[in-house]
Length: 360
Ligand code: FES
Image (cartoon, rainbow, N blue to C red):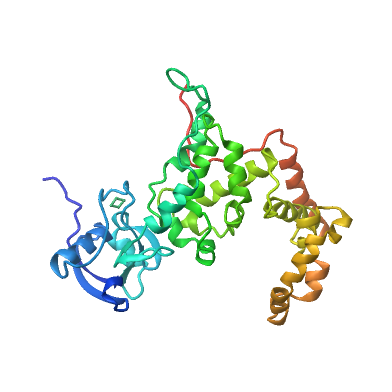
């Protein structure tokens, strides 16, 4: 007789965040006991709660196979696809064994676990002109492109528009106008496409926008949140590199120069030198850069923040002014890394998404 590995159903406690803006009542938590096999998904648990206990629970879903992107929620505080999260895994990460499900963040709640994707996510996707602006004349049959060029954009093409990265974006939490990780990853999809005719225009637009590519704070939250390994932050960094280093776009946000200041400071000192940051960001590496009027203005406007940090003991004035010191050998080791990278003829973009070799 064939051996079966089916595990028997178990009981799980599900805590659901409930909210109906039209009711005028505050959000509240609702708890149900679910009986399902542990390998079943959180989505199945929510649907069971809806079928058995309360038909008014709001949840959006379609494919149940991590393809359509419609079941994005938060499970135990982390963004996830409900259909792609096993109950036993969710229980392991739960507090006191209770699986908590909530709507995604950074988007208004329409009802319970359903958020308004139109109000935020799709609006931002539209912002980046999410279609190919083809080179002319369009070939009679098809464009022929290098295989590598398409591999390069494959990672962004894997996005299923679930909104998990938007939900967890810290920059968007502070600045809701930020174009955001999903839309900027979508922008790279076309910036990196050799058939597109508007690479410079797309990059210039997103570099000059104060809420564009330089508004990302590099927090990695979107990288962790993405269920498809799209690495939105990595795509934003690639947009920045192409804009600044290849297209030589000087953005009015001073973003590219600020990045250059960080890299040259680390090259010179081995660690960040906070007191040099503003002068270099505005005046470049020269000694006279310190006297750039914009650097003075920025320094003045940053004084309250600096003072607060000093008073709270987060920054020591001596360390901030004189910079951190590392050993000579350590500094040489850091500078050796720079030499190796800078001596390459071409910038090497590591694409970890596609691996393996051609058989030919
Ligand atoms: Fe389609 Fe979950 S239901 S991704």
